[in-house]
Length: 196
Image 1: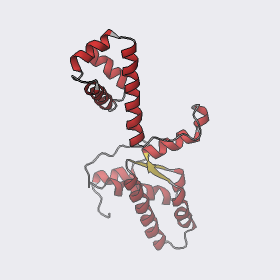
Image 2: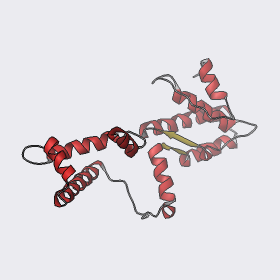
Image 3: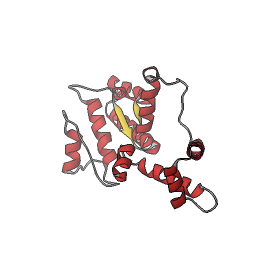
Image 4: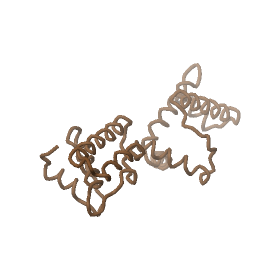
């Protein structure tokens, strides 16, 4: 992109501060970020290695596209300056650069620090099917505990919101509420506030 808008140019060139670029889809955010990264790499006063940067996106596709675009931009710079050892080095470092999703980055942090978190080093993230099965098993166990304890609040809730034949309707309602509150940064606080 040769013709940057004033805002894009500013986002590319500003330094020494935190920067948030918010724009609609197709507005050129990726192009701006790639240009910003390339300029930091080729800055003659204080060049930065690509593998010393953390570049985070929301999707795997966006991370792949970012890596590809950075590679293309570095390739163009290398065409202009084929003798540049620094650019050749950056092309090699690109393969090990941290260009990833926020989830992958966080997973790497946890895996590299499992011992500080008291986690099994072989932990893994459950897939969607496993997650659903664990939730169903958990809610069935919880309901069973409530039945055995003859919890009067639970019985009242069941009378009001349970089905005629079984408690599946109430279980589904509890799971729906659980899924909904997960969108809140502090689910328990939100639930307590709503109950009040």
